[in-house]
Every structure is written in C-alpha cells, then in structure tokens.
Image (cartoon, rainbow, N blue to C red; front, side, top):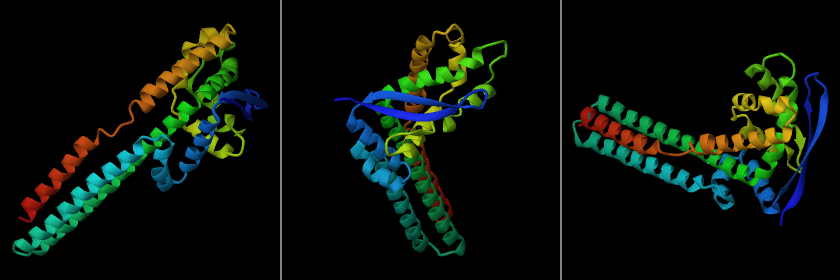
Length: 260
C-alpha cells in the first residue's frame, strides 16, 4: 500500500530570494526504506558490495565474478613467471621481469575492481531511481517553475544561465524524513547527469505560453528516456571481454620472451 511522503526545502529565484517548496508524492514504504539504505551504503563501498544484492542491485555478483577472474588469472601468471625464473638460467634481469608481471597483474586487478565498483554504483542509482519514479514526476514540475522566468523577455537562454538556475545542490536542499543528506545525494547524482539545456529549449514554447503541466509531463518523459537509455542502458561490463584476454596475452608474451 502506498503512502504519501513530503520533501520540503528552498531554492533561489532570479532575484536571489529564497523560495520555499514542498513536494508530496506517493511511494511504497518498502521502497522508501530500501532507498534510504542504498543511499546510506553509497558512502560505504564495501558494505554496498556485501549488502547491495539483497536490496535489488544486480551488479554485486558481477563485481565478485570480475574480481575472481582477474585475481585468479594474474595470480596464476605470477606463479608461472616464478616457475620459469627458476626453470631457466637465473638472471637479475629476469627477476625484474617477474616484478613487472606482479605490478602489471596487480594494477589491472585493482583497475578492474574499481571499474566494476563504478558499475555497481550506477546500478544502485538505477534501483533508487526506479523506486522514486513518482518523485521525479513531481520534481519535473519544480524545474519548470524554476526556469519559467528564463523564457520570459528577449534574453536568449544559454547553457550557463540554465546551469546556474538549476543548481541542484542548492535546489534540493531539503528535509526528507530522517535522511536528508542521503536523499539529496542520490537525487543530485541523477539530476546532474541530465542535459537539461536541450530538453528545456525544446519546451520553450509550452513554458512561455504557461502550459506548465504539459511542459512538466514532457520534461519527465524526456528525463526518463535519457536516464533509462543513456545512463543505465550504457552501464555494463563488456570491457571485461577485451581487457581480461589482453591482460593474459600481455603477461604471457612478457614471460615467454623475457624469461623463457
């Protein structure tokens, strides 16, 4: 059963005055609890990796899979380089090659873990976004209200002016039950990735005519399409299919041609 939730806060108008706003939206209590937990976990990487899967984050298993593949491959190649070092005529130069094998393997393992963790973070934001769909419909109305004055008069709208007007760090300075910091962080993470300049320019006619309800609906549809396709749609680990073979091939060549 859905319950009503309220966000209160302030944002600056074109005259630098503080304007109060309230956003009331419906959501399932379980989703709110899940969002609060996920937003809190964004500040704790290891906890997010351990507990994210229980909260709907799909990337957690993939993180351990990628880490396992790179760790096992590079550990095996490092041990193989040591074996080749003592199976051939020992030279100090060959010992340096073994050190390079260790450094390269360790570096690529750390890089793969970092990049996969970034995948987990984006997937976490996806879960949060899906649980807050009704909220983002409401915030699109707030954005239309906030930029309405930019379409008045003869002053041309610029990306700089719009960016200044849509200072989400200030605009979403709100109270959200007991976790305002976490909610603000999650919302701003998503909103700052959206190219609002082009979207709002397309809606200039509707906004100028005062059709704010229609404009906010169109804006939400544009936002949702961009977020779903460009942010979450491009979040993947396809790079593993070329980086892991390259990693293995590079170290094998290094071992075979420099150690023997």
